[in-house]
Image (tube, rainbow, N blue to C red; front, top):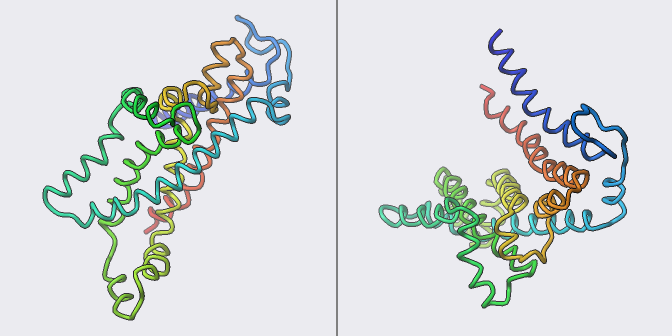
Length: 256
């Protein structure tokens, strides 16, 4: 009985905020103490579909997160593999260096990067924001691939090389196919690390690069709760999709 009550409480805690956001996104007028909006409207969703500022922020967020996920994996794969092959103090130093940008608060990381990005001319640009997002993303993904390659059986690669395969063929025909699921998960993780970034985007983008996370805050400050709720719901979609996609893999892992 207690477990069912705890489960119901957890479901209510998850569903209630989503329901409130959904109601806000369609609300016309909604003032306290009314339990439901007095009128309903599709204004914010029509603005999204008509290609307004909200749609632009969505496209920018998707593009930046996708690039961060892909480029982050390209950089992190050799780094994680190198750390996994290291031993002794070199491994400890490599793990610590990869963990540092992950553990550092984004606001502190952004403050440290801001001056360098201004000098390099990357501040206030989409490229600069992507590079800033890559700093924690590469650190996190390097740790991820460190774990992947620690458990990787290199004898498969050695067998391919003994049969005359070139290094590029070993990577493309042997290594990458073996870790394809881990690679897909890593791209998704890199996507999410960029998708929810607020502090780095604000500090490096300087308010010029608009993303959904920034728009939520801007709409709230402007008192446009309807648009803020719509942007917040859009922010929730990718994590839910990743969670749904990872569920079958978790079930296979739990199967005897």
